[in-house]
Image 1 (tube, protein in one colour):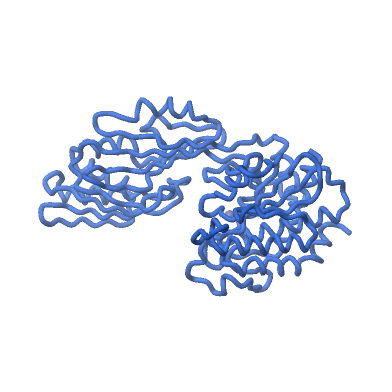
Image 2 (image 1 turned 180 degrees about the vertical axis):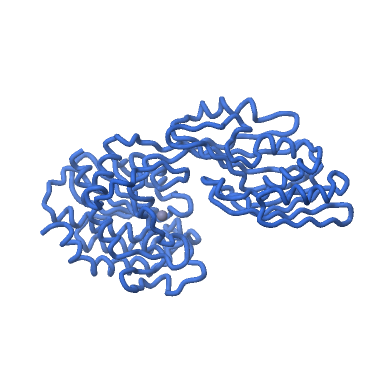
Length: 452
Ligand SMILES: [Zn+2]
């Protein structure tokens, strides 16, 4: 029997398995003894390992951080790394997010795509490989993590207590594979002397600061000129009020992920730009505009760099004022071919001057496998063999996936090109056909890796 037919035969069983996982609200909860991420993640891991055991696989629970199901034998380990934790269901669902609901050729529920559906596809890929009778001279290990959404401490634990995988993939990104993920450079810019009384905006470092409120003394800027300058920015909305000798500027831009800051409009950036244009003379306004600005390209830090796989991006996420000092969080996504030393050397001359100071908090390593590397080729070939689609190519992204938390793997699926499964949103869904195709691709991908 061929793989496609067998998957069709197993489809109802796969959906039943998925519904057994979807019923758990496996959002990270309060840590309990022996349950580092709380009850929900521990319960869903137990259920998944129970299912894998029923399917005849060897299973192991690694202290409720993660677990694995395994087939085959040999020195090497092909790792498939999925996660069972989810983001909160949130509002706006048309169905019960914790009850797998089938409507037509789609199923709905939190995690049906990200990443419980992917875990089920991987589990059945193992089953098909075992049934196929091909020699499994490597171990094939499906690792199921419980903390991808809130820090990937599950994989830190795996790396500490278990054998590393030789190669593999995580079905927690996009098809036809992500062969590079930019490095993350985090910095904080601080004011020295400033007339700004307070400036506060943004709530996370990894999103564009989309709302910001700034207070300045009335005598440092002309209100009419300020309004004119604000009107010339890309802000969606702004409001200027003056009372008791102070001007308050409320600015509303557009939210976007930090890895694509140009898709947003930074409320803090536009405010600073307008203050300067309106004629305010201030050290930190000048420092902000010359170093951070609104271009999102890192030029002000000597970091306007790029390579064949993309440009550096810079995002100001949070602006805070404490004891008269303003701080701005900066999240930069660094091109995959640059290393830490190069970044430090480029930025160093620009970090501090008389008007302000910036500190480097962290320079995270990028993830990068050339397109022609055996790993990327094995996975991409499996995708092409099953789908026939050669128009989409493996990609490099600014965001980070689970692949960064465990060496030797890249992200491969589960999202499809030009398709929106409402991941992290209400009414998360999965086409049953996608689940079947995904399973077939993973069978072929592991076969390719076995030959590698
Ligand atoms: Zn995920």
